[in-house]
Structures are given as C-alpha cells and as structure tokens.
Length: 145
Length: 179
Image: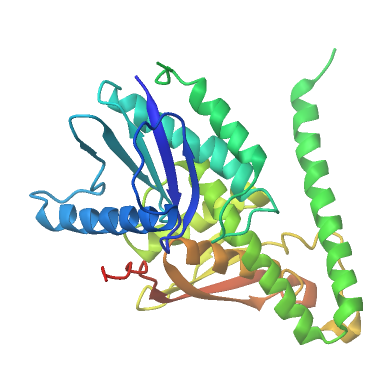
C-alpha cells in the first residue's frame, strides 16, 4: 500500500505543488509539460464523464485504475484539484479520507492561512511540504517498500 | 468551584472585542495614510477581497459543504459563514423578484462595537472589509457578485444592511488545446 506522488492544481490549471514519495519511472517531459498534460487530461476526463453519465450525480470523475497504479482525483468546491497516485491495493475510502484530510488539515492550515503563500503561485513553503509529508506518512495507507 | 463554561464564552467575547479594536486601529491608520475617504473605502474592500479568497477555503473545509444549486442556498451559506467567523447572525431579507439579490441585516455593525464616526467621515463605509470578503469568497466558488452597504448603524441608520447581487457565473478556464 503506497502513495506515489501528489499534484495540486488551482482553478486556472497552474500546478501549485508537486511532491513524490515513491516514483520509479519518470517521463521524459519537463515538470511543466507533464503538469499541463495532466491537467488537460483531467479536465477532459471530467467533462467526458459528466456527459456520458447515465444518472444525474454531483460527483463525477473520481479515479482511474491501471495495472500498475491508481490515479485518485479530489476537487473542492473552489475548483482546487488534488491528484494522488497510489498503488492498486489501497482502500478507496481511506484514500478519499486522506485526500480530504490533506485539503482540510494541511492545505487550509499551512497554505491558505500562510501570508507567504499567494493564490495562483507555486507553494514553496517548507513548512507546508513537511507537514504534508508528516501527514501522509503517518496515514494508514503509506508504507515504504 | 471553577466554572470552565463561563470562561470559554468570556474568551470568545474577548477575542471578538480584540478583533473589533484591531480593526478600528487599522481603519484609523488607513485614514491617516490615504486621507481621501473613497480611497479608504476602496482599500478596505481590497483587503476584504484578499481575506475572502482565503477564508472561503477555511469555510469549505470546516463545514464540508457541497455546491449550491441556487442563489438562495448561497445566501444561507453566507449567513452561516458570518455566524461562524464573526459570531453574529444576520437576517436574510429583501429578495428581489428574480431571486438574484438579497440583503443581510445586522442589528449593529458587526465590527463597529466601539466605534463612533467623526463628522468628516460620513461617507466612510467602515466595515467595507466585510463586503470585500463576501465578494472574494463568492468569486472563489464561481459566483461574481456585487456587494455594498445600504444602511449602517454607524452613520445613524436603524440597522446595518449589506446588499448582495448576483452578476454572473464564472466558468473555469479551459486549458489550451494540444499544439
């Protein structure tokens, strides 16, 4: 049960934050290109999922699963997007709780409330990174191999 | 016998007073810096806007709300947020016919507890920071609104009334297509 990496995007598609815990393969693109590609894909997926949905539902796209990893998506009402890649064995409710916890306890406390973090800019705060790291590593779904 | 419950309400009241006093000192300083009352109003609104865009995330995190389906739900959420952060409960009144405008009515000015406006500041919208905060917060949840003071107890009216008007829905920016 592992957490691979986390991306945080704001409503305009700017990558606010990226952190990786365990990533064995990297893409050949630059970080900015990768972020743009990911954001574009998520945006299209969300819209596609909503269009093709057979029922009316509030939540749309939540995650996709491949043979190696699962991509989990969490969007706040303020269009803040959290993308967390985990392995396939992790329990989905735990992941959603973790993502919700990252938003309420780490992002709101250490990014929103920090005067040094400006909206629309990359989060460079070390405190934020450390608290996030602490939170994720102490959660039940994190386990290093 | 100790009375811990009494102490809890006292601390809440004390920090509310501290907030009002701090805000008063802030407005006084800005008045000194800008001197022009309209500039001060603009600055207070801008400061409120910066507070609003952040405080909305705190509100969303604390209350776990979901998207509002219409403007009436939004008005209730705004009322809830003011209760949460300022510890005062405004009334929602005066809905327009198209359901796109409403008023928040406070008994007294929520930050103006110890305030008396001098004669040369009759155009000063003392609590304009509130209007800015409401505008900023609603902008972060895709609603563009206009927010202004209709009445203010500090300028001699009976109640303090803020009017909020829905302007338009802000769509998320679509990412650029592939090259």
